[in-house]
Amino acid sequence: MAKRIDVSGLSAYYGSTKAIEDISMTVEPRSVTAFIGPSGCGKSTFLRTLNRMHEVIPGARVEGKVMLDDENLYGSAVDPVAVRRTVGMVFQRPNPFPTMSIFDNVAAGLRLAGVKKKSVLEGVVEKSLKGANLWNEVKDRLNKPGAGLSGGQQQRLCIARAIAVEPQVLLMDEPCSALDPISTLAIEDLIGELKSQFTIVIVTHNMQQAARVSDRTAFFNLAGVGQPGKLVELDDTQRIFSNPSVQATEDYISGRFG
Amino acid sequence: MTSSPPAESEGRVRRSRSDSRRGDSIFFNLSRGSGILLLVIMAAIAGFLAYRSWLAISKDQANFLTTFEWTPDAAKPVFGIAVLAFGTVVSAVIAMAIAVPVAIGIALFISHYAPRRIAQPFAYLVDLLAAVPSIVYGLWGALFLVPHMAGLTAWMDQYLGWTFVFKQTQLGVTPRNLFTVGVLLAIMILPIITAVTREVFRQVPRAHEEAALALGATRWEMIRTAVLPFGRPGIISASMLGLGRALGETIAVATVLSTSSVLSLHVLDLGGGTFAQNIALKFGEAMPFGRDALMASGLVLFVITLLVNGAARLIIARRKEYSGANA
Image (cartoon, rainbow over the protein chains, first blue to last red):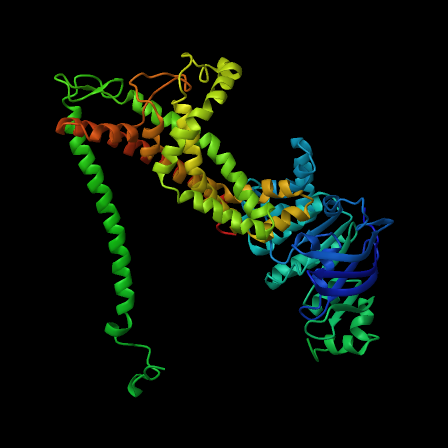
C-alpha cells in the first residue's frame, strides 16, 4: 500500500473563481505532509482535488495533473468513484452516518465495494477499529449508534471507516479542529502509527500540530482577497519551522500575520 | 433606544417581575391554550361520534362489523361496514403502493438530480398539483381516467389475473372499480408526499453525503447510504399525511366509484365503497337514524386513522437513536 502523489500545474475553480493556482508538489509514500496557511488560502480545496472530491460541488472544476504513482487521477478514463476508494478522506467535523451502528459505519465502505460475507466484514471492522485505537472503547457496543460516541471517538470511528477500505492515501481536512486537546492527542498519536501504512496528507490550522505530526510541511498563501491561493514552499517540517527559505513563511509561523 | 433603565436599577440582578416577564407569560399561556384547545376539539369530535354511533349501533339488527348492506332507514334497520372498510383500506393501499415510490423518486430528482434551475420550477409545479380541488380530480377521474383505464384493466386481468386480486370476474363493465379509485387517489396524494419528502431530503447534512462519496459511493449509493436512511422518519410521516388524505377522500371517490353493496375481493370488479364516499352519498337523503348510522361509520374511519398514525409513530420511535437528530 501507500503510493506517491505527484501534482503538477494544478488549478481549481469554483465556477469562474479561481481558488488555487498552478500548484506542483510531490508527496512521498508513508510520510505525513501537513498543509498550513491562513484561512481561504485554498489548502482544503487543494486537499479535495487529491481525491476528486472538489468536483462534487456544482460548478467546480480542476485543471492540471495529479499522478498517483504512474496514474493520472484526472485522466479521461479514470472513474472518480474509483479514485475515492483509493484515496480516503477524513473531514473536519466527525461525520459518522447517524442512521448506522458503529459496526455498520466501519463496514460501510466495504459494503459499497460489494463485500457481503459476514466473517470478512467482522474481521475488517475489528482490524480497522484497532487500527484507529478505538476497539477497546467500543468492542462491547458495536451495534449501538455511532452518533452516540464522544466527538473524539466519532472522529476515530471516521478514521476507522476510511482505513477499512485500505486506501493508498489518507487525506485529513483539519481532523482535530472540532476536538478537545486530549482527543486531539489521541488522533495525533494515531497519525504517527498510520503513516507506516499510508501516505497521509493533513490540513491543519494548528502549527504546533503540523510540527508534531508531519515530516514535510507545505505553506500556502494568497496574495490578497479574491486572489487564488498558491503554494509558497514545501520542505522538511523541521526546516520550515526553524529556517524557512521564504520570508512569508517565517512571518506566518512566527505569528506576524494570518 | 426607546428607554434607558432607571438609575437605581443599574447593576442589579433583580428586576421587577411584572414588566419583564409579561411577554413570557402571554406566550406561555397562548401556546398552552392552543394545546389544550386541540385536546378539547379531539375529545369533542370523539365524544360526539361515539355517542351518536352508540345510538345507531345499539339498534342495528345485524352485525355492524360484518354486514354488507347499508339500509338503516328500513323498517328493520340493517347496516354494516364490511364493504366500506374493505373499500377504504384497499383503495388507500393501492394509492400508497403507487404514490410513495413515485413521490420518493420525484423528491430525489428535485433535491439531488435536477440542476437547480429546473428543480425550482419543477418543485413549484408539484406544489401546484396539491392546490387542485378534489372535485376537479373527481371530474377528471370520471371523464378521462375511467374511459382510459379500460385497456390497462384488461391487460392486468390477462397477465396478472393469476394473482386472484387482479382477476376480473365481470366482462365488459366500465372500470369504475377500487383499482381506478386507487390510481386516482395516488395522483391526489402524490404532491403532499413529494413536498414533505423533498424537504426532508434537502435537510440531509452535506457532511453525511460527502462521507459516503469519499468512501467511493456512486450518486445512487450515496443516496442509499446517507440520504434515504436519514430521510426515513420523514418518508413515513409524509406517507401518513398522504394516507390520511386517501382514507378520507370523499368527493373524488364518489364521482368515480360505482356504488354497490357487494364485497368483491377482485379489485378490478365493478363497485365497492368507502366510508367517506358512502357518507357523502347517503347523508342528504338519510333520516335522523340513518344519519346516526353514518356517524358510526365515520367513527370507524376515525379509529382506523388513529391506529395507522399510532403505528407510524411507533415505527419512527423504535429507531429514534438512529434518527440523526443528535448528530
